[in-house]
Length: 332
Image (cartoon, rainbow, N blue to C red; front, side, top):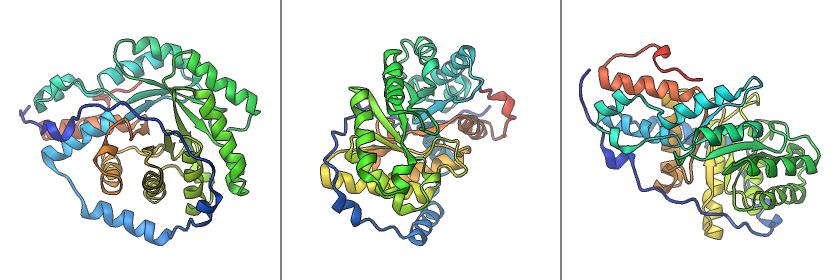
């Protein structure tokens, strides 16, 4: 094994406590001005990743940054307490100790950004992560479809919080977007925000089911006006999940919202992000469009389960010069 080092300042920054987005009254006039050019969005994301590349120790540093922004997730019908405990063990030590030592970053205490589970698995995750400082995020509001009575969805939020969730990922009613009922969407998310209290609200738009980029940008604005602390692309269960053109549309909405209100809102792509190359593409997008602060877990997360395996394999290649088999980097 060859010994090398990673530029620490490029990887680690003092953590910021996430701020809250207090929201604004619904502004329908703002929504009427929304226009998105799909061709331009696709061209921008294609050239963005083609013109920007990182190699060698800089690539390793970016990959370690991606690890720190991961929402390590298990949302399967066969989840068990033991699987959640194994996931949390991986969250505490996401990269093998020998690799971190070889890169000279063993002292940085790198962990993932959060662990994301179903509400019934929250207490198991909270117990497994005790003392680690890693927050537990819970999906709620009848994830992934969101087609339950409002009272049930609100109670699911409250249940997850009572069990110890520090963040709640809610799903919206897509029908409100598809029918242009922006007041109903605003009222729904505002009610979810109220139910969350001091717990951070991440709003899943399920972008693969919203038909157009224009609808996606409008839904992004409404979610932020209603008080969402993060906006998130997908449940991971749609036919089309996170894509760069969709993400560009959402992060530009975040940028405009910040310019108008002064509030910083986080962004979380989720679903279909499986390779280290994908992770770097999204980090480049955040850096180019929103700036350095959106390379921290306070404002950026990647929702993924299998992504970490490929990142570890790339880091082992950086250290040893060889690609390892996937079984050397087991996941629950």
